[in-house]
Length: 534
Ligand SMILES: Nc1ncnc2c1ncn2[C@@H]1O[C@H](COP(=O)(O)OP(=O)(O)OP(=O)(O)O)[C@@H](O)[C@H]1O
Ligand SMILES: [Mg+2]
Image 1 (spheres, rainbow, N blue to C red):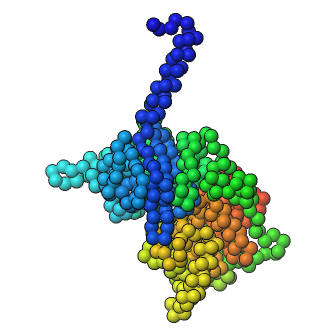
Image 2 (image 1 turned 30 degrees about the horizontal axis):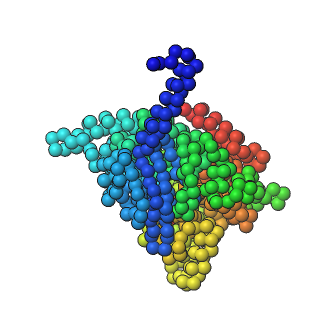
Image 3 (image 1 turned 45 degrees about the vertical axis):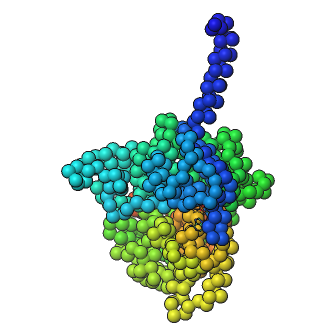
C-alpha cells in the first residue's frame, strides 16, 4: 500500500532514488581496467594500473611526462600488447589486437600528435577510411557537405576542400577531434587535445565535450593543464612512474592536493613549484644593454607586416597574441625559415640577411620550434644524437664532437631538463611526448646561442618541468643570453619576460615593459586589439 503521509512518502521515494542511483552507477561503468602492466626494454611503463570509466563521465588522466598515460591508451586500443591485466568493456573482456578493432568497438582516440594526412583535404580527413561512395567513386558533394556541417560546430572558418596541411597545427588538431567525435564512439579519448589550442578553441572543444557528456558519452581526457581539468572533468585518476596513485572526484581534491599527488611530494614542500613570480632579469640600472637582434621595418609580403623590435643581452622578450597573430611567423622570419623582403635585420649591430636557418645558426641564433614533431624530432636517432645536432651543426661537420663530449652534453641536459629515459642511447621515438619535447629544447640550449627563440616551449610539459623551463629562461637571461619567448600562457609570459610584445594580425600591436607587465595587462592588450579588428 502506498504511504499517504507526505513525509514518509518523500523519505521512501528518496530511498528509492538512492537505490536506483547505486544500481545505475554500477551499471553505468563502461570500462574497467585492472592490474594493467606493460614493459618496454629497460622501462616499466605500467605496473598494476587500474581505471574505471562511466557513461556520461569526463574522466581526466593525469601524471608527469612519462607517467604512462599514453601507454594506457595505446594498450587499450591495441597499439601495444599488454603484459598483464584485465580490460572489461561493456561488461565483457576486451583484447583489441589493432587500433582498427578498437575503433570498430567504439573506442576512438585522438593522439597527442595529429596523425591525419596533410595532403588530403580537410573533408577527406574527417571521413578518412569511410568516405561516402557513389557509383564506385567518392561522393565528394555529400562528403563535403557533411564535413562542412561537422566543422561548423567548432566555429572554424576554414575551407574544407583545402589540404589539411595548409592549416596550423591547432586547426589540424580540431579536425582530428571533429573526426573522432563523428566516429560514433562509445569512449572518446583525448590525449592532450588542448595543448595546441588557444583559449577560444579550448572553450569550443569543451562545449562539444559537455554536449557529448550530456548525451551519455564517456570521455577520457589527458591533460597537463590543471585549471582545464578542474573546469571540465568529473573524476581524475593520477599515475606516477607507471603506477596507479588513485582516483578522486574532482570536487573532492583541491589543487595543492592534486599537484602533490602528481609530483609525489608533500603539499608543504610544493611552494617552489607553485611560487608566483620568478626573478625579473631586466637589466635596469645597468645602462643600455647591447642589442643582440634588432629589426627595423622587417616584414614579408603576404606575411609579417613591417615591424621593429630590439632584444638585448639579458632580455627576455615575451611574445603574446592569439593563434594566427603572427608569433610563429615572426620567429620563422628571424630564423631564416621564411625570408624577409622588407626592412633591415641587425645581429649584434651588423646588418645581415638571413635566408636560411644555417646562416642563423652560424650567427648564433637558435629556434626551438612550436611543431616539434615535424620540425624537430629525428625519431630513429638516439636522445644523445638529437641533443647534439644543433651544436654540431653550428661547429660545422668537420669538427665532430667526440663520443665522450656528446655523452657529457647529453647527460647534462637529461639532468637539467629531467628527461625520463633509461639512457642517452634510447631512440627518441620511444620517449613519451613531453620528454621528446624536452630533448628538442635541450638541443637548442646545447647550441649555446646568443639569441634563443623558444616557441611554446612548455606546451605538453608537466607541471614540475614547466617551472624548471621557466626558471631556465630567467637563468639564461642572467647569463646574458637574449631570449624571445612565445607562449599562449599569459601567466608564464608575465613571470619570465622583461618586455612583452603583443601581436595581432601579423604585426606588433602593443609593447609592455617593466611594471606594466602582468597577466591582466597582456590579456587586455590582446582583447582590445581583437575586438577592434573583428
Ligand atoms: N615504444 C616504446 N618503447 C620504449 N619505451 C616506451 C615506448 N613507449 C613509451 N615508452 C616509455 O614508457 C613510459 C611511459 O610513456 P608514456 O608515453 O605513456 O608517458 P605519458 O604519461 O603519456 O607522458 P607525456 O605526458 O610526456 O605524454 C616512458 O618512460 C616512455 O619512455
Ligand atoms: Mg603522452
